[in-house]
Length: 235
Image 1 (cartoon, one colour):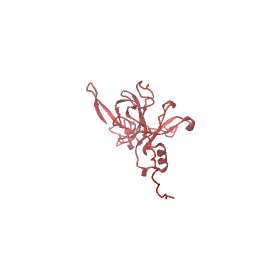
Image 2 (cartoon, rainbow, N blue to C red):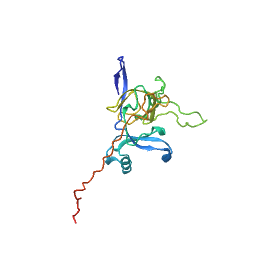
Image 3 (spheres, one colour):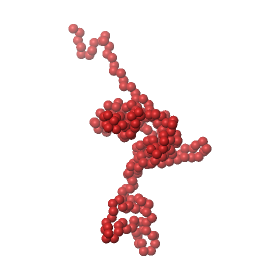
Image 4 (tube, rainbow, N blue to C red):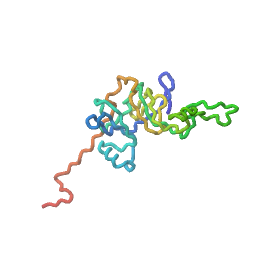
């Protein structure tokens, strides 16, 4: 995170997100898969750390192996060609977006930290149980603790989506998207950004998206007919 200043001199805290070569790795169509979606991959991954099945999948799309792959549902008229790279100006400043990520794991946490419980009275008679969560059940009826009771346990490491965040600025040259405020996830982790589902998309947003066309594959080399091929003999 960092902060930027607007024209009025007001500083705004922003989270800097990097695209890192976000490319279309596959298309899902209604005829073949039963739904319409785009599969996007981001981040570089060494081929030696990529499974053979993944290598074949990326080789078919003519893209480098990706660290993270995710699918996004789209309409049939918003499909983008396989191999195209999405740029940062896919979003426009002021647009509302939804960001999903894996929250930071906190390990085993007590009820006060995990659920914001008030705890017991820190006075006489409570002994050393000030931070306990208190009773968890009733008497003989029902005689049990119901499921999903808020108690101490594992905290964090959950998929969380924050709605209606604002795009503060984009930098297409460096592939950066600056989001106003905080987003879920730890530093260096992957997050998903989509158009806000509860807000209308801006009229000036690119359709179907701001992309950089895929590089054309190299043309096959032509052999010189005047020179004999290697291993051939003149008759």
